[in-house]
Length: 221
Image 1 (tube, rainbow, N blue to C red):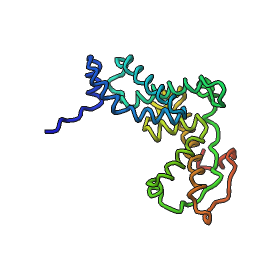
Image 2: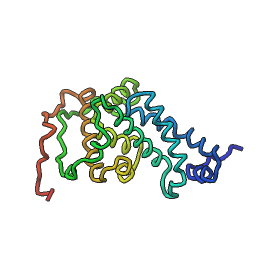
Image 3: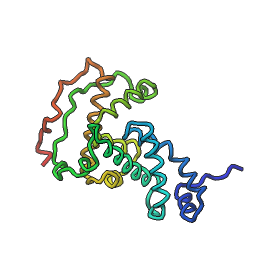
Image 4: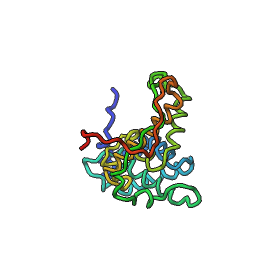
């Protein structure tokens, strides 16, 4: 008879009671996911390893602080994100935004206009078909790496890791409204980059400036 797999919540409860093997099982479940997230943020294998180790050490030290209603995976991603941004902050020589610059933006960002994509076209092939190809996945990773840090981070947490808007806001230290704005911008920029590779030139729409304001209509008021 096959033993029933324990849920994250059950493993957390056992780990809180002192069962380190339960925590080791949680590490096995999430180690690769956390490393991948860290690598996408810090873009360096060894730094990603360090972030992963620091994440699980922090999780173990603060496990009692995890509330019953919280998802262990989402909580772990939030910890990993904070550690990853500390790595970026230490890279003084690289043209990367510091944690302070990322989290202490003007409150009026919510009011900024959403840019129009510069290039829009129907895709030549079905997106699901394209995703099955290794070279396509490499292009997607490249497009993701080219996003500005603040947009890439929100996209990773929301669309890749599946965190809620609230969880993402808590991880990055920004408002929920800013999360929504940044996510929309990230999706638009990614869509544009990928469409340049996969879009049908024959169905191209005239380009728009990214900083052009959206046209307001009577429906917006």
